[in-house]
Length: 133
Image (tube, rainbow, N blue to C red):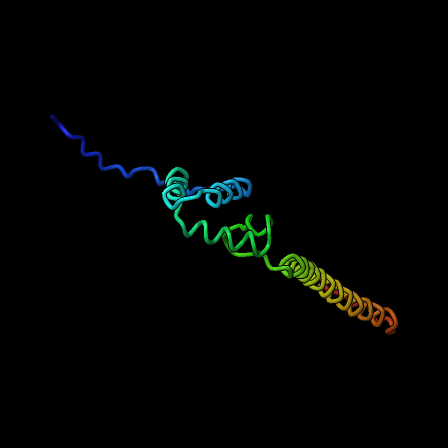
């Protein structure tokens, strides 16, 4: 008899997720069970631990159905949307400011050039230089 030594890792199991209705159904079954053996049978059938029941009870008693629908992971910060909007606006305004600074710089150069041209025109005409050939 040959045994296969497959070196490939097995697929990672996915985390079980219970809906609010599933949690309430399991809690009702567990609490309706009269004996510890019947409660253990409910836990084994659903594949959960008694700690799940404890946590679900606390959440249900503390906040009702909405508390049982807790999502995992970091909670979004209420200022996050406004902060993102303000950062985008800041970037837009910085870009606009840079454009306006370039415009002012070009206008200053144009003014200096026009003043130089105006001063040459206001100056008395000089005699044209004659070239000798």
